[in-house]
Image 1: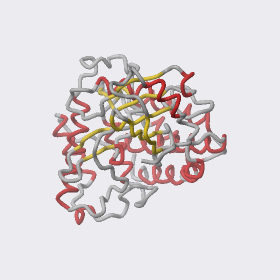
Image 2 (image 1 turned 90 degrees about the vertical axis):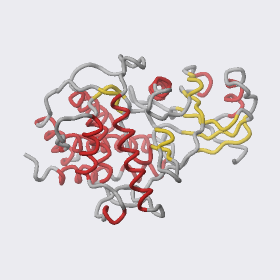
Image 3 (image 1 turned 45 degrees about the horizontal axis):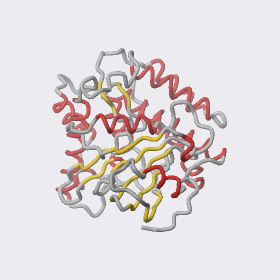
Image 4 (image 1 turned 60 degrees about the horizontal axis):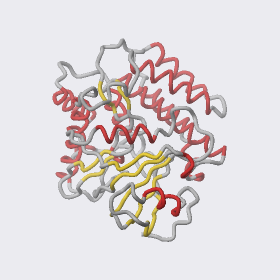
Length: 346
C-alpha cells in the first residue's frame, strides 16, 4: 500500500491515536489507499499492524440532513453479524467530530472481488450464472431477516415506504436543484399519481442493491460481503429488487454499469422476468410482482442522488470533483430512461 497518505480527509496521526486501545493489536498505520469509487462517503483502506482495515467517513462541509449516514451503515452491519447476510465485521463508530471533523467507522477488510460491469467480462458463463443466482439468494435472505430480532425494529418509520421515500427524495432533490428540469417534474408527477397502496410488507432493505456493492469469491461466485449500507432502512422489499432492475437498464460501460442492449442469454445472465420470478419463489410470494413503480422510483432516486453529487461539486466539497461533475451531468439522461420505461404503463 501507498505511504505516506497525505490526504487531508485522513490525518493518520489523529486516526492512529484514536484507534490505539480501541482495536486489539493496533498501534500504527503502515499505509493508506483511498478508494477511487464512491461519491458519498470517502473510504480508505488501511494497512495496519492489526491487519487490513477499512475506514469510512462522512465528507467535509455542510451536509444535507440524514445524508451520508455512516452511523446507519455501522449499526446495520453490526446487527447483521451472524445472520445469513454476509457483512464485514465492524469494530467501532466514532461520532466525536473532534477526531476527523465528521463521524466515521472502522471495519474489517473482506477478501473478495467487486465488479463494476454487470456483464462480468472475462468471467466464465457458468460463473456469471452462479454469481447472479447468489445475488438473488442473498437479496431474498436479507428480506427474510426479522428486523426486531436483530435489534432494528426502530430502523425506519411506519407507513407506506414508497410514499415516505418519494417525499424524502423530493426534498433532497429540491434542496440541491441547480436549474429547471421539466422531465423530472413529469416523473415526480407520475410517481405521485401511481403510488401503490401500502400492502403492509416490511423488511430490512439495503437501499442500493447492485453488483458493485457486493464482494464475491471469483472462483465460486459466492457473496463474501454486502457493502454500502448508507441508504438502508425498514421498507418495502421490492424497492431493492427495483433498484437492481433499474441498474440493468442503464447503458453498458464504466459509468452506466448497465446491461442495455446486451444479449444476456449469450452471457449466462437472467432476464428481468426470470430474476424476479426466482426472487418471488425464494421470498415465498404467491404472485410475480409488477415492478413498474419500483423501477421508476429507483430511477427517480438515482437522479436525485446524482443531483446531490452535482451540487456538492459546485460547492467544492465533492470527494472526487471531476467525477462528481460528470455524474451530475447524467441526471437528465437518467430521468429520460425512467420516462421511456413508463411509455407503456397505465
